[in-house]
Image (cartoon, rainbow, N blue to C red; front, side):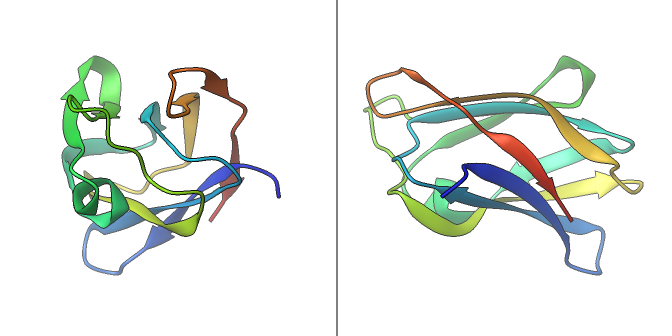
Length: 109
């Protein structure tokens, strides 16, 4: 399995960030190109107790202070409310349960 993130248009100015991962996810950070991020919430990140915040330059950050993780597999990582249509996700930084970096790619739409 290739670890990847994707974008899925929900048709209502929100976009699902899909994921496929062979490892549990302990944290994530990425930047949206082509649109401005208004909010980030929901998905498996929310279900697993992650805190999500927005950084400068359309960066989205997700982490768990108590050390929770998102189990390996596939699903919707989170939902983004965007102003505009995104072109891609860049600067992907995804970590595993112990904080080690995981290789991820942007798989498209």
